[in-house]
Image (cartoon, one colour):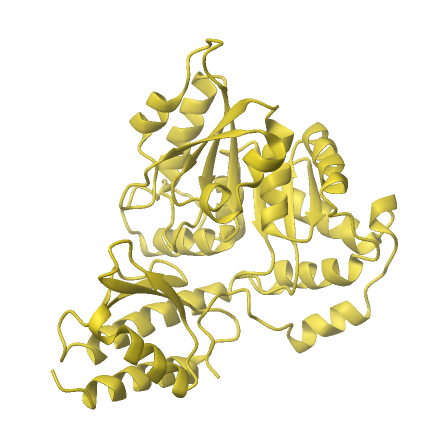
Length: 371
């Protein structure tokens, strides 16, 4: 059954299961699980940080990250659509007494630099003290340009602020930026002589941030887990928060071994996910061409995620048809209720046959539907 709901639905590969079965184990809360220690050291070295800490989820590593940067009553600048603000249950405010200052995302997913600058509060007791600028990459499948990240870092440094990246799909961004570089595309992301290797690109992205949360169970396809990366003193604070938040695991090397395997074997293959997303989006567009306005891909995918707008007049019928044909996809109503936004996500467990099946299901739906 083709499952396009999220890249979190992947199952461990046979090789990953072998890595789990043969993992060296200890007690991670005591700091003596060799598989966890290896993963943390490997990721930190790979991405240019001093240290890392392994935790169960990206929601937790983001929260640990914010709590380790901000004191009670301080402020974090975030995007209206960032997970740290909208999709993580208000944890920074509820558990950390951190005030989020949301900014409307631009069409390309960025936060306008002038809007960030305007949101920074003066040092005045009437205001929360601005402490942190958060980014998210990718955001809705869109890649934040490298030059933009450099500008955000320069602004933060000039204003005495720290930066955090929700890099849940960091390597999806790195793979796409690497593709653009290899193709010689002049998009503002290309630098003379810059490497197209996604590991190097990911390290370059991370160089603009004081901390990065990286999910291992999305595009990388490990079963569970995320990493928070930063300086050694910062990660020491984060470990204390992990304990408080209930994220200390014992023989976590079973999970760390799967994550290690993902970092070693699943980065380059993400290009296939991106290619399949582009083919799926093109196929959906062609399949729905006979019924203008009924189903429209909002933008060509940059990575493994794209959105399709389904008119309310066909939304329920199309959802039922896809379900009946074994095609799983998520979505939600638009704010005005006039349409339904589907989110399509490709991943390790989506193959070419699954793409064909989804396109065929949509073709059948519109072929059998009168105008």
